[in-house]
Amino acid sequence: MSSYSTNEFRNGLKVMLEGEPCVILEAEFVKPGKGQAFTRAKFRNLISGRVWDRTLRSGETMESANVVELDMEYLYTDGTEWHFMRMDDTFEQVSASAAVVGDAKQWLTEQDRCTVTLWEGDPISVVPPNFVELEIKDTDPGVRGDTVAGGSKPATLATGTTIRVPLFIDVGEVVRVDTRTGEYVGRSKQS
Amino acid sequence: MHTPVVGSQTVTDIQIDSIPVQRGFLQTSPEFFMKRLLASGVPSCYQIGPVFRDGEVGKWHNPEFMMLEWYRIGFDSRQLREEVEGLVDLVLGTGTYRTVTYKDLIGEEIGIDVFDTSPREIHRVAVHLGYSGSEDFTEVCDFLYSQAMNSCDCSRYFVVDFPEESAALAETKISESGMVADRFELIASRIELANGYNELLDPDELKRRMALDNKIRCDKSKSAVDPDERLLDAMRHGLPQCSGVAIGLDRLVALALGFESLGQVMTFPVNRI
Image (cartoon, rainbow over all chains, first blue to last red):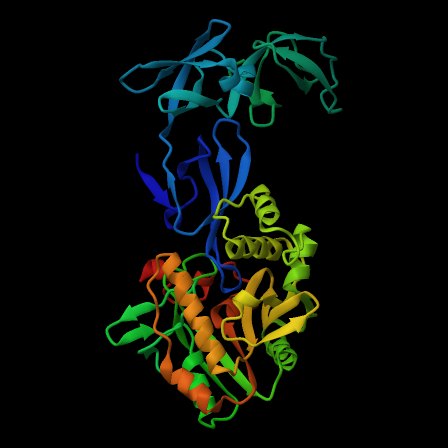
């Protein structure tokens, strides 16, 4: 297993910290008052998403984390596992638990392209596409003419997730949603 | 004045790594040469020149940098701090300066008295703040000092009364919290700009500190550094009472221009040479 010295630290490097894979968000060399040199770094835990601040003695090494991010196609869920397939020639499949898929599951429909992070070959996080298009399954009837007021109402999407949509959106329409904010962006161009 | 960039001797400081060259070492500061001149009768003097410290690379560090160093005969450290304020005001614009002791800075920012808490408890607090280094007391304090400096909102301030162990070439004095180093650092916008001493005059004390440095260097598997006998001889002859300070000139210029790293004021920072 390769390792990195603090002087090789750069943003995006993936290392093992306290037994868990992390990505370096920032690293700064500090040498207070002619004393010991340190590297003050921020790590994002790739499993929990939490940010850890750590100050390491300069020159210390950290084991690299065997982490890869792959574009994968979401296939289906059997209710306990979510199945994804590599989009290269291997067509290799992996399955992820509900905990790993996390918030992504409220947006995923079959054949969506996701970014799946694998650690030692196992999925540890799933990022959905930035934008998804989903059909409205249920919402109160729209009010004609009320397109300017900017009012909104709850609507349930095909995935079961509820978001807020403008009053003029009706059941059966397909809307575009920003998965990073969970907000309605517009009507799908296809609908 | 100009003193040599290459000297046959160098500093024994535990945390400063000199770059060895064929005829000695690239100087980490012009201090030894300037003190020999002061002992020979040269009056208060200054120098601007390149200095070298191995391995120091980062946003605010470069192994070769420009240092402005000067000595004032007859000044104590407070008088020299006032002079430093004057110079920094000229370059960065007039500001206000607070003076805070090392103990109080860490006390205010971290909430712990490093002079009156067990090393074990201090280490526990450090680990809680993300420290992952050794239990070595000095190292833990270095970490807490850097954390305190990083969280302190004061735009310009002097830190004074450092722990006795970090006196290096500074005189020590008795304070409310015991023996401390008569040394100061100027912090501006969270960056260390200057390091100054009421200069140690006693050659025997310096020799004792250099031997202690070498003992610790050995413990840390670093090579020992011979004491500079010419400097010690000059001090035996007699160094006049004086205070001296060194300013990282590249940092000062970078701050004056509102830059966010040293690389922006250097023609070729170390990663491009």
